[in-house]
Length: 313
Ligand code: TA6
Image (cartoon, rainbow, N blue to C red; front, side, top):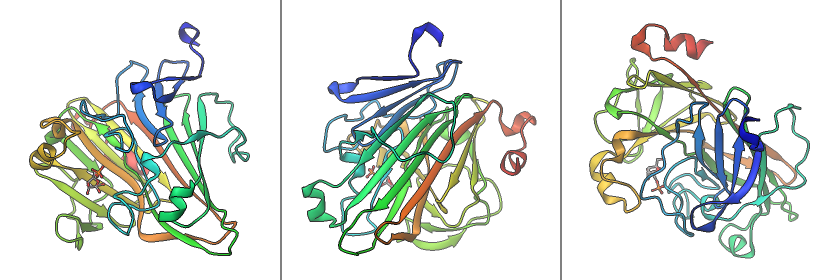
């Protein structure tokens, strides 16, 4: 390992909150806060930050941390009676010391297992027993994997349903130079038009104003091309049929206390999600939702990378 740094380090972060740092031999790293079970940093082997975290982010309960990869559970957005995006993102998770065996036996050491279970308070607002296990893995090539396993542990025979999203904030050089590939011609619900349903046009998605769309039944791979940085993020997902694309643009940016007025120019949320069809689990049943993020060092216009090849590759 470079500089004797261990692959997994438990330490303190902002405001003394517990965090875990994952490191990979070639130099890439990731940071996960137990508060929210939230990834707040993902750096490549050049030490470049790939995720956006607002300079005004508040690392203090009950506020969710503005940036990284917040987890929306058991409710996405205001699709239900609970607080916006549910409560998992403003709860303290624990280290899972006895995770059930993981399907893939990997020699990879840079991973951490977290677990969230309902508190007495949570059961009053969402009366369901569950175990939410989250494994965050930093792969040998610097890829970042998040695997959620949610099990219904109700002993009253009751099923429960939930919606879910990995609310990923990607760091981009200039939003007006970013294209998203893989969502063309799909139906979406427009959150700026009372969730009315529309069909996306045939070309790559570009950005010149506020966007807040839930794309339905997307491919498992989506490409986010940052032309200026000659970098393409490849988002792969399993068990998460939908994808949300969000940029608050200038007005909403000014309205958010934990977000800088101009920061909308340097971030884009592309969120692997299960929204249109809530997931229902009977007691004993388990759901798995996986997100894999990687980067490819070039962008469309350089001709080197045809996004279709990325998406089909
Ligand atoms: O994922 C998009 C969205 O639902 C937007 O509607 C916007 O509200 C965003 O999430 C941020 O939500 P938050 O509760 O973190 O301010």
